[in-house]
Amino acid sequence: ESGQKQVSDIRQMANQGYDGILVNTWDSEAVNPAIDEATEQGVPVFTANVDATTENVTMYVAFSNRAAAETAAEQTIAELEEEKPDQDSYQILDVMGAPAQQITQQRDEPFVEKISNTDGFEIADKVPGEFTRDAAQQATSEWINANGAPDAIYSANLSMGLGVLTALKNAGLAAKRGEDDHVVLVQLDAGPQVIEGINDGYIDAAIDQPNYFYGPIALKYMRKYVEGDGEDEIPEVGTTITADDLTIEPAQHKGVELWSEPVWAPAEIVEKDGHVQFQTNSVTVTEENADEPYLWGNIWG
Image (cartoon, rainbow, N blue to C red; front, side, top):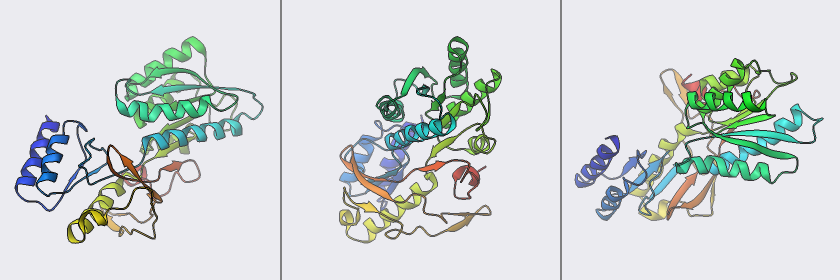
């Protein structure tokens, strides 16, 4: 229903002659015809956080799931070598999302590829966590009961990472960083409870999104587009945008200063589904920076 409402909202805004439309899409396929129609009516449509797959999107702003998954693999390798330096080989359990979803491949394949192509590192198994805490907890518990604890576990989103940690705690296998039998835990997304897990020594790292920058960046370019030279205001594919090129002014919201650190930068301008993506950087959260006020998990924690 929300997807249908979004489609009708876009059509209504285009018919009313809005200068531009910013969408966090509910369904990246279903929304395409409405975006195509708006573009034909001369209304630019920008997407943020979740994209549409039509080439008529003017610009999409978000980090890269694929790049984050590869970063997570690099972090897992580094954490294992630091935590367990005497081992010759390492077994990693991969807790992936819902197999049918595109985001599952994006957040899983680069991780598996990087691990599999690194000597001494092996994916012990893949279990479906369905992007939920309960499913990840159950799948991890069942795997550990049958096989024992792996050297590391990768979780492809926030909820699954918390489910994995609960499974380890329930099995009496949750040792802290630096302790014998510590299972290295690396995941995507750093919400408040994940940050707590990092500070407590159970979670080693989370690759996070500078998500609260997506909307302001998209709106900044929409304004340039509308008030300036249209398409010419959109950065070219192949270029890099740094914090020197783009300023998002800090502001107070509910007693918290937002946008004070440009953690989105640098951003690569890439092509996706025939349109431009402003691909922000990701943030690797470890015990070193887990308390920083620029992390969304601390802002909304």
